[in-house]
Amino acid sequence: MKFNFKYKMGDQELQETEEEKDLGMYVNSSMKFGRQCAESVKKANRMICIIKRNFTNFDRKVVLNLYKALVRPHLDYCVPVWKPYLRKDIQLLAGVQRRMTKIIHGMRNKTYEERLKELRLMTIEQRHLRQDMITFYNITQGRINMQVDNYVDILRESNTRGHNMKIRPSRVRLEVQRNSYFKRIWNAWNKLPQEAVTAQTLNKFKNSIADCGIFKGRGDLLSR
Image (cartoon, rainbow, N blue to C red; front, side, top):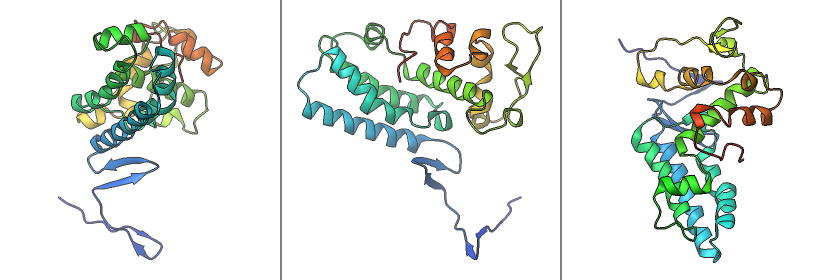
């Protein structure tokens, strides 16, 4: 059964649309973010081209600083909202980091994995997971104006294994639901150590998750 609802703002009837841009993000009716990924990559690649045209020094420190300040913010902007889960979208974003790390002197002939290890960078997926954890920490600490109990069921019990702020998993049927923010974070959040979820400051939280198993092998946990 299809319902034909009409919505108005004042006397103006709102037109139905399949896709809209709001606060710099593209959202469509299926809640998939392929367009957002493509636009983010386009902006990031445009910035890489500007860097390559205007700089001649491509040593490690210079390129990493430029990447973190001018390129990566396009891949990170509001990512807990639109974090991709389709492999093609993830690879599209990772391609930006592959391209940027390759222009560093001495890195061209190394594999992507070797470059990440030597440069102490996380994969795009690991970085997005880190952003998810930081966002939820800020929600639990009241730094983001959201009532956490309206979205997840927190098991505030001292007899649970690990920390005492675990999220109770909920069963979902659709893939788009399973990959929505509050449905996807429970497994990683539940694996965090007690000192992380009870950290008094954001920097202490970042320090606490630096050695956590879900981020093992990467050293870029404290970068902006």
